[in-house]
Amino acid sequence: MQGEPEVAVLRLGHRPGRDERMTTHVGLTARALGADRLVLANAGASRQDTVEDITDRFGGPFEVEVTEQPNRFLKDWSGSIAHLTMYGLPVQEVEGEIRAAHRSEPLLLVVGAEKVGFEVYERADWNVGVTNQPHSEVAGLAVFLDRLFEGRELDREWEDADRVVQPRPEGKRVVPAEEAAETADDG
Image (cartoon, rainbow, N blue to C red):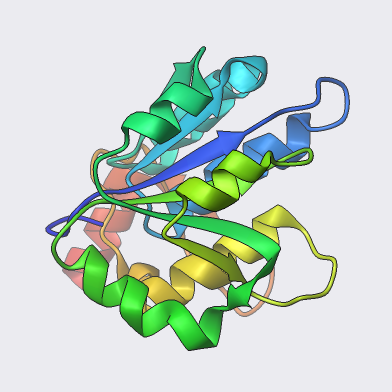
């Protein structure tokens, strides 16, 4: 989030034909809940345009990049690394330590698709589980980011948005950003 050390999400792995929506949702969740950047392994590169399109329409900042060498990216990361896995330590036991480390250095969140190699577990500073039950990597990422930012990400300001969702008790309403700004000025 703005004004803090970077939080990047590395989507490690992507199974074509199976993970298109899941990889897209990892990116959208990362963006919506406070991460600054998504790094996609080469096989997931087809999802880059979708996440960038949402960022263009609903605001940023948020970056998406593709790496052909995700293991090299992981190895070369300078900062802390949290690997999100159901086999990790309970998030409630390590979130304070991770939050404290993030105050002074960038944080990389590793979110797997397929079976993650043991070298990821070894490279990570923390292997973190939001539950030790089978669950979606999108759910794990969402819970972790909310705990990391302690809910502050929910009030984030979005820059350069073309469209704004107007909260409503019923129905859906998306308006041009200029209209939302005029309504806010009138309120």
